[in-house]
Each structure stands twice: as C-alpha cells, then as structure tokens.
Length: 496
Image 1 (cartoon, rainbow, N blue to C red):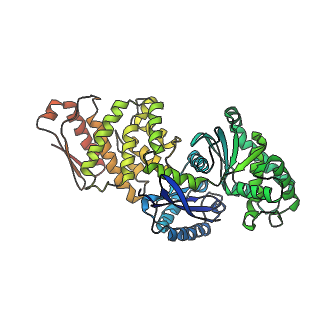
Image 2: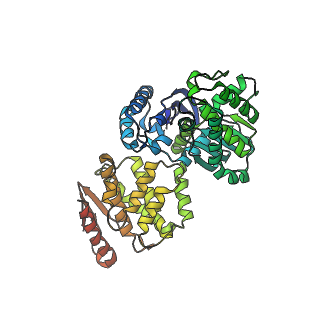
Image 3: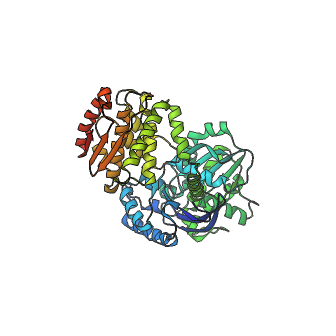
C-alpha cells in the first residue's frame, strides 16, 4: 500500500450497516469519513431463516450508496464483512452474490469469535494503553461479543446469541415494554453470559469498555440525564430500566439523549447490557469510539505490512496438531514452484488463490492427529469448523476443500457447491497440491530434480530429466495412479 492511499471497511451488521473510509499515514489509519444506515437486516429473517425480498432491497439500496463513495478505492483496499444475520440466513449466498454486484467488492462472512477479535482490535487502537487487561463488550443486532484482551491482542473471545434486534422480537415484539418482559429479557441475557462467567471472572480485567452503537446510545442517555459524569454505571442502568418500563412502549420513550431512530431497540439493548453487568459484576463501563469497522481497517493494514494474523493462525494449528514441519515445508515449496509455472496459463495469479494454496499445503496433514485412515477428511472437517483468527468462513472453506482433495478421490461433489467462477480455480489448485504431495510421498530430504510443468487448457505436462523416473519407481507409480484421478475431473496429466 502506497503512502496516503485510501482504504475502506464495511460492516454488514444485523441492525446497521457501517462504512468507514480512511487513508494510510506512516503505518497508522487516519479516518476520513464514516457512514451508517439502519438497515435492520436481522428483522428480515422469516421463520425459516431466509431473508425476505423487502429487506434485501433495503440492504442493496444502502450498499449502492456506499459503493458510490468508494468508487476510487482500489479493490484490494476494501474489506466487507457480514456478521450474525448472514451467518444464519439460509439464502445468504444468493444475497451476497447480489450485494457483491452492487458493491464491486467481495463480501466475507466472519465467525462470531473472529468478529470479536476484530472488535477488540478496533477498540484497542482507539484507547490509550492502560497497562492491564480489558473486558470489551459489543451488543449487535443479532449477537453480542465479549472479549478479554491485553494491549492489541485479544486473549479470550466469545460471541453470544443475543442482540438488540433478536431480543426486541422475543420480548418486545409489539412495541410494548412491560416489567415482566424486561425481567425476562434481563434473565435471558444473564443465562447467555452464565456459560462464560466462571472463565471470564477467573481471568479478570481492570477496565470494562463498551463498543457498539447500542452501548453508546445508553451512555448518551446516562450522561445527558445526569446519572453519570462519563460512561455507564450499574446504578444508572437500573434507574433507566425503571423509566423505560414506566413509559410502557418504545414510542412513548422520552429520555434525554435518546435519538428517535434508537427507540425501537433501546429497551432490548438495555436489557442485554443490564444482564451482562449483573452477571459479571460490572459496576462501571467506559465507551470506545472504535469497533468492528476500525478493527477491519487495522487488520487490513497489517496484511499489507506482513503482520497478517492468518499466518499466525496457520502456525498455531500446525503446532497444536503436531504437523511435521519438514514435510509441510517440502510440499509448500514445491507447490509454489508448480503454481509459478502454470499461474499465467491457468489464470491463477490472484493473490487470494495463492494464499489458499500455501495454507492448504502447510496444513494438508493436520488430520493425522485424529487418524491415519481418511486423514484428509478429518483435516478438512477440522479446518471447516475451527476458530481460525483472521479467516473468513469462505477462506476456511476453500483451504478445507484443498486439504480434503489432496489425496484419494477428488471432491467433485463438494466443488459443485461453489459458484461457477470459483469452481475451476479451486479444482486447478487442488490438482497442483496433489502433484506436490505425490512428489514428496517418500518424505525424503533428497531434493527433487529439475522439473518442468506446462499447462495447456486441461492438459498438464510434467517432465523429468531422462532416466530419473526409472530410478524412482514409487514416484512413477504414484503419478500413474494420479493420471486416473485427473481423468475423473476431465483433466489430463501427461508425464514424460
């Protein structure tokens, strides 16, 4: 990234869509502009967890406005992430395809714990160092993230299935606010927090920080009502809750500092925060200006400055599951050389594709920690379902697919579930990884000979020095077997 170049982050939340535009300045992020619209994506989920057309149209219209602002921002400098609603929606894939057409940028769906990590990163960069640990709380439309971290590193991350939109539908659906409904909502929030309470209290924190629009709105009411000088206290929350119940409905709410557009979800957000305060014994919380979108910017900047958390995640998985480093590195280095030979002919120059191939090469044997039998399937399952900091769900799925397909039968049925424009590149990466693994079947430190790999359409020609294959019959037998697997995918492997 060049000095002064613009970058942008878009958060497709369950309640609001947020966008921030910034520029890179001496390794720091300088915010230029922020846009926010209450799309209420989470309200558009029907009983079968499908987004209705009206909500999709509202979302697409918002994204069209965002797209106009980032027209001049380079494609690789924009990150767009979907959170809880897009994790849940059964038709999320179809909506994302439409949204990507409008935006002109890829959309990632991140897991709850990855969302929490990014939130913490945004908060940490917006606050002065306090020399201790922080508890960060973010109440979204469909989920709430609670993180304990130190400095810029999140130590413990959790995403709980409660949000101001979902709680409004459960406890305040008709707009009425009753004492019984408020009590049920607070109790439900406490029940969600109960599962993490013991661990979080054991770890402890020196400062509690709120980081969402919902929490900022509550803090605004606390301060403008004269209940606190700064931030939020348990006593202030209790007093506001009584006033909210007394009002009897969202429309009748009259609280200093409360904006009109916040009224429909104020009671539900208040109930969640009150439940968190009570269950974790919080008495005071400050509020941060940073959140998920700022975290996205700093995470993006880190990728440009070789501080990509995904690389650390891959290494952590290798260490945890005792992947043999020497074999992983052999396959990694060889597959990169093979990729370089055919990248132009096979249209595999995209950096994201190369990253996927590298990570799959390093992790292709991760399933051996479960069992040698079918270890490629074990590895794929582990990588599909693990919490991998820095990775989107799509990135994890792509790496898992290559690990699944690096040996035995090609996963053609799994490939068929990908969009057409993604299917062919992933298959080609899979074929390259299979060749690298075959070439290192012997797990030997003996260097490979000078190889030549040429791609011509669906034909790969792999050439060895004269006589080398005759001296290595195991490799020759492996490649002959691989020729049969290639044919199953309508490709041809020629070995000379």
